[in-house]
Every structure is written in structure tokens, then in C-alpha cells.
Length: 283
Image (cartoon, rainbow, N blue to C red):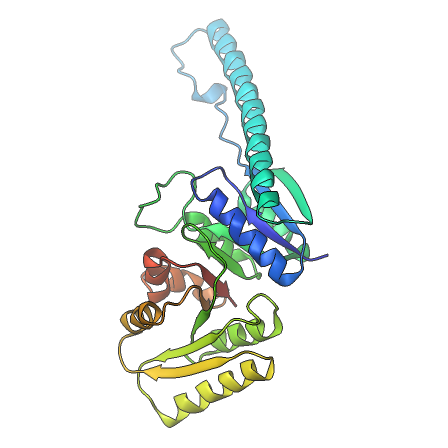
């Protein structure tokens, strides 16, 4: 069965990620998997030790380093288990029914790719365990996951509450049309009022694209308010978001070849950094 995968790392956002994933799993009628990845730190080898140290001392020091690494790995495993158990308790209190805990060794992205065939949605925090809540940045894991996974990504940016509406940032391009199709076919946002917003010039061609996207959503039962608003993308979308009290924003991502442009120095990157509401990234 296709699962919602929540990436839990013990950071300050883990509870918010868990809450968001419980909501998403309930909306989609899907089981929830809480995933914690144990990323192995590099081990020092004999070549790292100073050549000025005697051979016997060097071998002894290497043995000590290996033993220390094994102890560190054991502690990391136990700490990860504790993180997952705490997240499990939190998820059950939030209403999770079908719940699995999964701890994997290795890189988070590699683990997500291994699980991709059974994944319906990935839920991550905007920042990882090495960032503070007020860090003005995006965790590197978000870009790396988005560059490699084909699954939708729900980004938690703070304390999560079930949204009462959502907004789609639409530009009429292929990625945006794909996002519209994915939203229309998924139960994740069904029943929520939809604001379909296009920033920029109101031309006949763009109006035609917007109307087509609106019709597709309405055919699937969405209540849609569609607007074309003059202005620059970032400022127009954020102003609309704030004025209409939008509680979740969805947007399309480019394909693999343009994902770096999408995240680095783009309106989308700025939107993720500045957003105070969850974001759904689709492609």
C-alpha cells in the first residue's frame, strides 16, 4: 500500500512534521510511516594519523578510534529509536491509526528513493536538526529530495494545523499544469476551498490557461476562485496569501534538469524561506 512518509530527525520541527503527516495520511486514507535515517559519520583510518606517531602507538590509537566509532553508532541508533518512539506517541495522540516506525542506516535521500515505489507523499521540515527555527534558509535535504524523488513533498514550516483553504501558485507552464492534475486526482486537498492565482499580465492566452485549470479542478469537486493579478510573482502571491488568509500553498516544480534553478535564486526558493504556512511541492 502507498504510504505517507514523515522524515523525523529529532529537530524542533519534528513534532510539526508528525502532525502534518498525520493530517495528510488521514486525508488520503493512507498508512503513515515515520522514518529516521542514521547517516554515518566518516571513520578516520590509519592514513589520517600522523606519521610521526610510532607504529605501535598508531595501531593502538586506531583501535581506540574504531571502538569509539562503534560506541557512537550504537548511541546514535538508540537515540534514533527514542526519537521514533516519541514521534509515535505524538502521532497516536494526534489520531494516527495505521502507523509504522522505520529506522534506516544511510543517507536520507537514498532511503527515500529505496522506498519510493511505496510512497504517496513525503513530509519534511523546512529546516533540519542543524538549524534553529529562525534560520533564514532552506534545509539542504529539501533540495536534495526534490531533485531526486518523483513524489509530492509537503514542507512543514512551523506549528501545523489542518488547513481550511489552499492556494495554487499557477503560471500556465507544464510544471504548473502537472501540479493541477496531481491535485485534482488526489484526496489530499479535496473539500478545501481553492484559490488559483496567476501573477502578471492578464492576456487572452493566460486567461484561457487559467480557465482550463479552474475547470479541471471544478470537475473534480473543488470550489475554485481563480484570479490573474498584475505584479511581480513573489510580492503578488505573498500579498494575496496574506490578504486571503491562505493556510497552505501548492506549487509545481521543474523537472530534474531545472530543479537547481528552481531552488537557487528563484521565487519558489524565496517563497519557501519566507513562508509561514505549509507548502506542497509537486511535479
